[in-house]
Image (cartoon, rainbow, N blue to C red; front, side):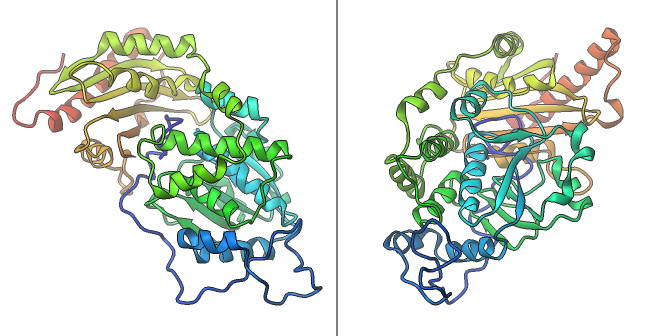
Amino acid sequence: MSQEPTDPHAHPVLEPDLEAGSSSTEPTEVSNSIPAATNSYGSNGNGGGGAMMVPASVERVRRFSDYRLDELHRLLTRHAGERHLVILQDFPDPDALACGWAYLLIAQQYDIRCDLVYAGTISHQENIALVKLTGMPVQNWPASTLKDRDWHSYQGCVFVDNQGATSQLTQWVQQMELPVLAVIDHHAGGDTVAEFVDIRPNIKATATILTQYLQGELLVLDRNVAEHIKCATALIHGIRSDTNGLLQAQEEDLLAVAYLSRYYDSQLLRSILQVNRTKQAMDVIERALKNRMIQNNFSLSGVGYLRYDARDAIPQAADFLVTEDNVHTAVVYGIVYDKDRERELVIGSLRTTKLTLDPDEFLKEAFGHDPQGRFFGGGRSQAGGFEIPMGFLAGLNDNPNYANLKWEVYDTQIKQKLLRLISPEKQVQVT
């Protein structure tokens, strides 16, 4: 982060990592109010709500999440028996999918029914395999169906691995005045107000945060419960994907993986990772190879127009181009039309192996921000992405001459903005 909207292994570009830290202020006193492991958190076993012994595993995990376990327990206790929406970004990656599922299972312990939803598309083959092979209870709510949803049946919503900026559902949440109960994320930025906020940019994956909740026994995993095994597998996949195969993992991430290793299914994870690229993705990679321009060890490639459900091929092409000799950074971009929202976007993805290049700073400087101060691009270590609405020039692509002309203009403009940073010492002719 993740994010970036186009990348199943990165994070939403509109919520980039800006600096380490949490949006919450740590209290000076911590109340040991988390109950011991039981099937229900509504009672302490003594018929009352008195103080209880905190499990040893909670004490161990306090050095990671300390008071947050107490805060989340109190939130869930307050809302016991309700029905909530757990909202993912429009194009959820493995981290988001796994975390949403883990939160759903935790909430069940408090008799809270959750629906795990997203409004966009899952198109990357690994993400499709993750959902299908695990039987993950995630629901697609396309934008065209949102007005017909029974919003009044929900008492609140939760944002997981995002803060609302990358979901079409957010405007409906606001319109329906649905309370935001929790925001759990590892991306900095955002100003969403909620009863519970756990935002930790210093952690590499939101799945690490959810795993710490499990370590704190807000949900006791059971090796005999198939759903627990599959969710643990999904969480490991989420951490793995957001840490570049654990190469960028920090202590918290590795400790989370070590804990999950007691429960996950290695064969299931192998099956998820061994899916083949689609012909659609291969065609985009072919275009990216054909159109690439190499300057100062940067590979820049525009792939033209793409269908909305093919946008995940862009980061896959960037992953491929960055492996070329004498290339340390690859940027791939194309024009995507979102017919549900009737808008056209330039969507791009960046991959780099250069440790001194910060994708977040690079893309922010290259593309700037909109009139509201919202950056068009951003990223994390070694990965980033951007989304630029085309506004007035969107649509009308039935005329091939007009479509080609529009693409040439945007292709040239994007290259010029990138080359201004790549080769500031000289003017590079874009053809």
